Length: 239
Image (cartoon, rainbow, N blue to C red; front, side, top):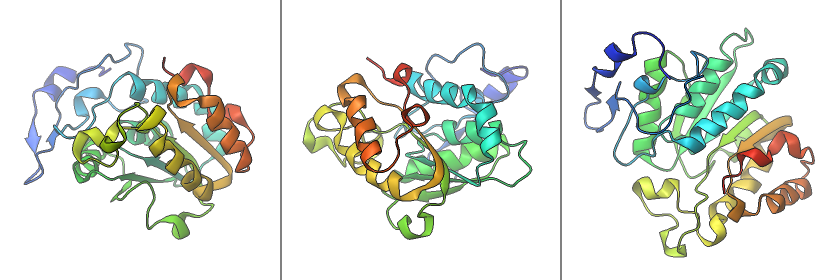
C-alpha cells in the first residue's frame, strides 16, 4: 500500500505521551497492491493495542469510496463524517481522496473509545490532513449541531453477532461486538444517521449477511432515504 519510501517510514515509531499510540508502525491485514497515494498509507497509520486495525472490511469501505470518487467530487460535500473511526484509516483516506476540492470540505470523526480518537488524530497528522475528532457514542451530544448537515457518512460498525452482554464493553471489543444478529448497535446508528444526513447525503456502511442488509435498506427507506445504491451495495456485505 505504501509507494516509495515505505521502508524508511516503517522504521519510525513514536509514542504519544501517555497514550500508548504508536505512529509509523506497519499494520497487519491484507492491503491491496493496487492502492495509490489516493488513500491513507499503511506504514503511516497509527496503532494501539485497544484499537481495531485496518483490515479487509476497512479496505472494502475505502475501495467503495474510491470507486465513487468522481461522484463524490461532483457532490462537493461540505461535511464528511466517520462514525466509529478506529485507527483513522477510512476518514484519512476520504480526506486524501477529496483534498483537491477547493470548497474547503470539513471532516469529523467520532469514537466511543478514547484510544481510537487518539489513534485517529495521530493518523491524520501523519498524512497532513485535518479532522475534528470527538470521543462520543455514535453522535451523542452532536445531534442538534449536525442535523441535516452531513453530506457523506462512512461507518464500519460493530456488526459481528455476539452475546448481548458484550455490547458496550470497553476497549477493542467495542469495535466488533454487535449483539443479536450483529444488529443491536446498527439499529442505534441508523436513526442517528437519518438525523444528521443532508438531503443530498450519502451513507456508506459495511454489513454482514447475518445483519440482514435488505432489512437495513428497508429501514432507511422508511426513514426517507430510498436510493439504496447510494446507501448500500451488495458486494460490501461480507459472508
